[in-house]
Length: 376
Figure 1 (cartoon, rainbow, N blue to C red):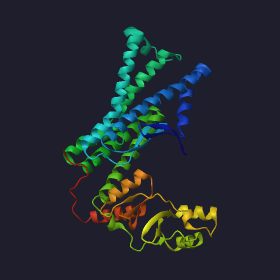
Figure 2 (cartoon, rainbow, N blue to C red):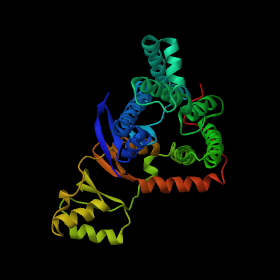
Figure 3 (cartoon, rainbow, N blue to C red):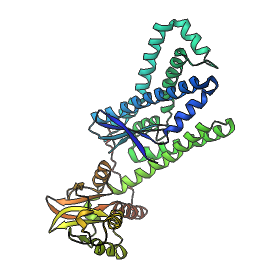
C-alpha cells in the first residue's frame, strides 16, 4: 500500500501511510458507545496524538539535521512514526542526542499540558479529571487527560532499551563509547530480542493485541539493525573500483527497445548504463526497459526510456559511501565517475555480492578492529 504526502516541514516530507486509516477507525470504535459525537471525538483524539508523534519525530530530525544528517521524510504508521535519515550518525554522542530528542519533546509537551491544566482546572480539578477518566464522556477535560497521559507514555515507552526504539539507540550509543559500535549493536539487539519475547508472552496471557504487534516490531526491528550493521561492516573501506563489473554491458541512446530487450535474456545485469562515447547520459533498469518497450513498441529508441538524472560517486569512494548516496537519492544504482569519464555502475546486486564475499572471508580471518563510530 502507498502513502499520502501531507506537506513539507523544515525541508522534510511529511507522509502518512495508507493503513493510517486503521488507527482512525480504531479511535472511533473505542468511543462508539457515546454515539456519532463519541466516534468523532475518538478519531479527533487519534489525529492529535499523531500530531504529538510528528513533533516527536521532528525532534529527532532537527537534531540530526543540525549534525549535517539529511532527513528524507517522516512517515506516519498506525503504530507510530518513523524519520527516514539518509545516513547514520558519525559518533556515539550524535546518536545519543538524536535518540533522546524525540522523547524529550514528549516530556516538554506533557509538562506544557500539565501547566495548562493547573491554570485551567487547578490542582484538585486535575486530580478529579484523572481519577474520573474511566467511562468519562467526551469532553475537553477528557481530551486534556488523554493527551497528557499519552505524551508521558510516549516518552517512557520509547525509552525502553530495545532496538530500534529510542531507548535501544541510547543503550547502543552509551555502549559504543566503550566497546565500539559493532559490539554495541550486537548487545543492544540481543537485549531487544529478549525484551520482545517477554512482551509477546505477556501480550498472549493478557490478551493485549497491540502489545503483541509492538513486540513483533521490536523483535524484527532488532534483527534488521543487526543485519544492517553486518552489511555496513562488510562494505566499509572497500573502494567502489573493487566491485565494478569490467564486463558490464553498456548501451547507447540509439539502441532500439527490441535490441535492448534481447540483452535481458542473455545478461543478468539489473541496470544498464547508457553512454554517448565515454560520457554517461542515463541509466535504464530491467523493469524500466520492459515497461518502456510495452508502452512505446519494439522500434522506439532507448533514449525515451532512460533515467537522465543519475546519482554518482568518485572513483575513490567506498561502497559504504555509494550505498549512502543510493539511499539519499532513493535509487537502486549509483554511477562511478572520474570527472566526466564513466567507470561503471554500482547496484544493489554488487553491494550484496561484496557483503556475501566479505562474510565468507570473515570466517577465516581475524575480526577487524575498525569501527564506524569513533570512540570519544
